[in-house]
Image (tube, rainbow, N blue to C red):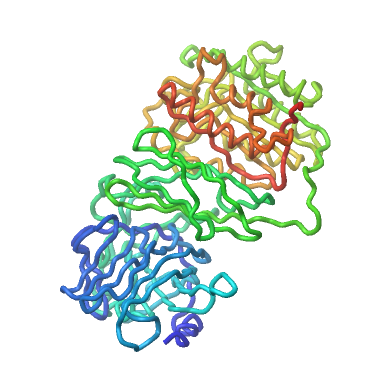
Length: 620
């Protein structure tokens, strides 16, 4: 059986191009048609889908469609804890691994009498290809997913040999597995030809945000038509359609990973995994594993609906798989997987990169010409304090720093901001130099008329002379930052933004429209920092408010930014504050202080600069 599986990828149906697929969601009563009989979802037990066939067969799937348990002939034939599932949205080329504990009444690949067997295994999975399968004369686009279960090598360490192999084919338009081949009879099946032949197409869905909580279709439902082609960019994940919306409680906790960013490549061995888990009811458990090894997750203060993640981790050379799994009080589970590549340079690595000159543009906008834009008391003092630090202890020559505030001769108008960012930073810094951009002031959201933002919201930095009724022509779109980054020759650019875009009252943001602030996401930051050597640190998450307080005399973010650059962020005590050390300090201190005053504010960092980038040196 196993030998045949190894040839499976080279035979049968043709390979196909397939659009990434969103995770399906099932309801009790949904059916899973198979050639060996139809299974029905009879219950959802602690966040797991339990499909049954009569009283003798059960298949337990996690919310991410990982096989957790098989009951065959009334006996538990296979049990895996934790279950191993693919990552959603599903894409060809994804892979991962993790350690798990298996239990079975028989040894793998053996006809020996039943008994009690079990132990630790390493489960490796990968989405091998898109493949067209034919059922009853009709082709379905599918993802072919291979699972390999390996046993531990007690003499040499690590894992070796194969206990089992399992191949599953997932069809996005049906929202279910339509074929399986493996060592267990309950996972060896096809889709009945009669079931496919009887399908009827559905009318097209209305466009929707990819991350919206609309549920996909249940197993056995007729397929929706294919999505319209897109012009350029990455394809949008397509979710199978559901006839009814799902209540929020049917979803697992929401996991936000602030650091590391997706596909991060770094040279250092130690990192800090930073994020937040939230749930409409209550977060019960958070688990973090690095390369299959669980890391301790400290419990932090906060309400039961939110749990902070701050987990130090040691990276191996090459790819490292970071998995964050969260469970809510109802037993519903969510998981996020990040791959972090530790690059080991050949020969001795330099302690710090060589930096030629340092350049900066510092902007603070507290006074606005338009009467409807709220004034900010501390934005100008924030910018002035940053300028003072950079041109003294920071080592930036004054001629290399442009300051635009309410108190400078050149005010922070749109024209002057464009001139500083687009002209000064275009002409002056060279490739080996470093650039720092700082902005304190209002941010504002607006409905994205162009349809380029995944959350449907455009974001703007608001200059002194902005007109809130015409942001497109009088404010600075965040999308323009990407073009500005492209004009800067310097290989290292760090941007720090003490602003926010939620439109909520009480912080450095406003809105002229009625917007649902909880729709915002931070994917635009990922887009802005795709180029090598670009980092953005923002004061708050997408749906949070950047606070300023009279007690500190600054914006909350800028106060701790100054403290961190001054030495508080020097975690290893080497006299140098690096960009990663600064972010870890900001994320912790700003979140702590915001909670103390009844707010919620967690800085985000996106982008990565290879090597260790010193932002300031601390006198010892």
